[in-house]
Length: 378
Image (cartoon, rainbow, N blue to C red; front, side):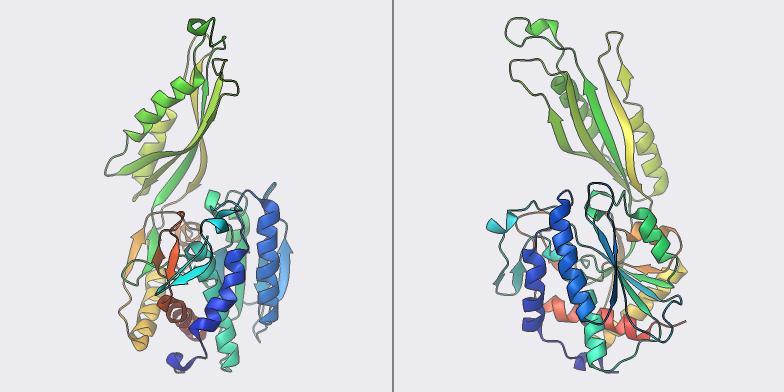
């Protein structure tokens, strides 16, 4: 099969991708995520798949499983796994509209990872149009909470992944046009500071500010960052009345390490920050969602080598690396299921108002995914 001859037109792909980008879907807005799932389910059903709608985690959006017709349907095959939630709140389109500027195309979630999710679907469509039968059956899974660590979908992800021989994840590609064969370990933490109330005007010294206590701890946490393990705080909420000394403040922290043992030590350091004073004030750290380190094994490297050969046919040298930032491949790769991540589009600025893709990567990465679907076998 000549992958370069697959019927893929960049302008048509961009036109099809646009509704996905303009359907905003921040994780914590279940109704918005469900609108995105409706759209993706409809497009995937139109491509010939049977759709199963899976109720989402409490307070979050649904998930969608799509199975494509195949003589070996029900047997172990290929899982193409994407998340359709983003970090961008509804209304971001006003500041970051879908637009093309030269070799770039902008929009909320276009790189992380709706562009890759769409490319995965279009790879299946292109093979069908070309009359190419895949050796293995294909299932697509769209999930709804990856941007918060997949706390509600991890069990679903692993249940589905264990039914398959290979897992392909079209998260953003690596700089230099590479893919991801491993991921760092990540832990999230819930932080709580408890203060003592008083009137901020007449009795200020009688109180103890939970916000001040939290602020001191946040500085200490971020100063713990070293070469082996990073620490950052990304969410903080506290106080209600400016004339009251605040009695509570909450925050969320993130730690990341290349090796599991380094993360484990980081977790111990974080948990050791918990303290309680005799007057009831104090600071508490609770461990939240954790993604295990994913180190490439032979199954993943064999999968990478097939992708490298396909890329070579298409005219480029496909590199690979372990990457920071979590993905659902942390779970599948760490469990020993051959997984290849970073198959999605190239670009930059994800999680910011400069998020964009390199337009030229859209058809190229779709061909790469199509080549894997067409050639992976028992």
